[in-house]
Structure formats: structure tokens, C-alpha cells
Length: 540
Figure: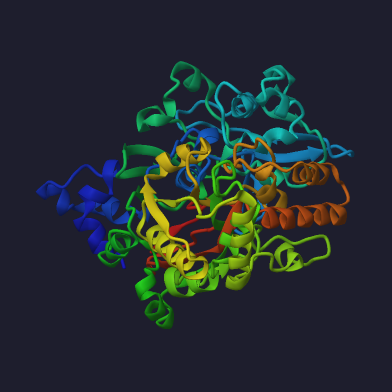
């Protein structure tokens, strides 16, 4: 656990720009200086790796959005109770037909340089999100805006996107259809504003601390690439009075054992639970578990043999015993994936979507062998083509990959090769359909099952499998248009069932938030359908 004395001794490494250094005088401060050092509250958190980008529409992954969620803020913000609350917008009005939403911005909201945050910053940012010249994986989220999909597809214009700054304090959005999830969705970093003058002046504005402007609880003071980012309290934030931390340092340590050692030595306030120590730490009540959302899974490349055959894909899916993976490998109390949509989404009948959908993913070694034989006959294989499973470099991902390798050998008699790549390389090659079978994860952007499922439509940038199904596309489009929630959920259940039957993906487990935390730290909010939030966090 990190103590105050460790904070004082380590001020050079941990307080960064907040303190002036570690000269003999600084290490033994007197009077007012001593009070200032004692008062500094710097939370140390492991981000695991370098963010993909701190440009809101571009990052679109946990490593980027955990940081952005504390640097910036949208029209709404997920509150402590996980529901969207007024943020940059003080209120919003929805038209009777549900297709026009008007957001009214707060007075006095500012960027970290003191400039006012305007409705036009949102209009500019959202159109940038959809701009086909600057492709963003998050763009399909904004297709619900009238003209959004056409613009992103190169068949429309920015002016045709119906998001408009009526004046500095009024943003009007016209939708293609009523969207009950919109208020929650605009809390996602993809919909954060950007400072237009900064973006237009410097296309690389989001690459360095010196050029990034923020409008959230914290601002970026220092960025040592692939090492750490230092955030400090943003004095211009509208709710700065409720921000108790002086700063947050995001480390980038891509090894769970090293992370745990740093936690033990007081250099991190939070750590993952190392699998080898999980049983002991749970027994001692030191490990904490909270509900989370999202799915750990593998993608099959349906354009590359042998996974261009559905029977073979299905065989690999049935050959995996996910219960053994969560019990014996990850040891974080995750739930084996019963489908692709994780728990925590209530349907119109009050039941959880996952419980209503039932167990779609099962382990059946005998059936897996039958399907493999069937698929090989369909494809004309006397011998299965060589299969390579690729994972991004990380010790836990490696252990899971090795376990899958052993299961495929035992249950299918197939020798699978393993390959590891850095995250950015793996993602780029996955998008280009250059990998046969590769690790992935999905963290939802808002609390609705359609967010899990619409990414597998034909041509969707989130698909990354080459899979295409006209029936599936039709189910998703019908769900988008359906205003009866009971019928909409029925369409989504049918779509998920088809996704698992066709098996372009192999779900492994649903995420949980399992961690160790210093007893010096309080009030960190972990959003199941969002990102970690230090706005209300404090240190004793």
C-alpha cells in the first residue's frame, strides 16, 4: 500500500510537474512548502500500454479512452450510479417523435487554456468523427444521426450531417430514428468535443502534452511515450470543486507480475490480481471484484483457409472449454462467455438480455470433431491447412493462447502455431485481414445490446473477420428501425444466435473488474458500460 512517506521520498518520480524537484531543500520542506507537499494527492494507475491516440474519434480502445475519460468530457457523463448525468450540457430536450434532441450547454464551461467550450466544438468534432478522409472505427456509432452514414460512406457531405450549433450554447441533433441510447452514448469519448482552432492549426495536436487541450477534470502535464502520462487537476473544469485529486499518473507496464510488484512497493495504487496469487488474495479478502462489461474473444478470418468454412470455425468454437480458462488460467472470477453480449443489460421484460438469450456458446469435444471432419470434407481437405493463432504481446494473453493451443490439440487433434505481435501491429493486420485467427476484445460504448452486435454487419470497420450475412444485416437494420422494445430485443436475440451459429468469432469470457487497491484510495468509479473515472476519487 502506498503511504504518505513513500509519496514524499519519491517526489521526483511521482509528482512530476506538481513539485519542483528533489534537491536537499525540497526533500525536507518547511512551513507552507511542507503543507503543499503533504497535500499533494497523486494517484498512480497502470494503463498497461501507450494510448492508440488521444484524439477522441481515433483512440477507440480502452488504453486511450480510460485516459480521455479523465481529460475530457462530453455533453453527458456517466455518474456514480452508472446512468448519464448533465455534464457539458446542463439539460436536453427530446421532440415528441424522438427524432430531434436539443442539448443546452452550461454557462462558463472552458477549455484548459481558458477558451470557452462552444456548441460548435461539438458540431466540428462529430463531423470529424464521420469524415471519410479521417476514418474512425467509432464512426458507425454516429450513423443514428441523419446524414451521418452517407457522409462517412463518401456519398454525402458534412453539411448533410444533421448536427448543428444553433448558437454557442445550443446543439441540435436530428436522428434517423428514435434512439433510446443516445443520451448514454454521447458520454462516450468518441463524442467528446475538440478545440477547433487547435485541430485546424496542428493536425498532430493530440500527439504531445504541449498541444493537447482538454475540458475535463484533469489536463495533461507530461507525456513520456511508452512510459507514462501525468495528468493534473484542471482549474478551468466547471465542476473543479468536486475534483479532489491533484493528479493521476498513468503508467504503461505490460506485465501483470511487474504491475503487482509495483503495487507491493507502493509505486502503483491499483493492480490486477496475478493469476498465481488470486486464490490466496481472494481468501484474504484483498482482491475486489465488480461487475464489468465486454467480451474477450478471438476473430476468425473467414476469407482465409481453413476458416472460410463455417463448419471448421464451429468446430474450433466447440473445442474450447472456457470454464477451464477462467478457473485455471485467468483466475479473476470472470464468467465464461455464453454468447457475445455480456451481462448487465435489462430487456423490456426486466430480464437480463444474456439470461433471456441463454447459453449459445458451449464446449462439446465430440461434436467439435464431427464438425471438423464435416468441414474438411466440404472443403476437400485431406489434411487441414496450417493454422496460426496470433495474440498481442502480454503475459496473460500468452497463457490463454497456449491453453487454446493445447485444447485444439487434445480435442481436435490439430497442431496450432502461436505468434505474438504488438497491439498496434496486430490491430492493423487484423483490419487488413492478414491474420488467420487473432485475439480481440470488445468493450461496449453504451448500454444497449445493439452496440455489441451491429459491428458484425457487412463492411462495418469493427467486423475484421470478412464475414458477411445478408440475413444478419437485415436483422440489425430491422432492430434499428423497431420502436417496440419487445420486438427490438427479439430481433437482437435472433441476430446474436445467428452470429454464434456462423462463428466468425470465438467468445472466451465476459470481463469482470478484478483488482487490488490501496486502502489510501477511495471513490474510484469503474463504469461497466464506460471507462474508469477519477473525477470523484480521493486519497487519505
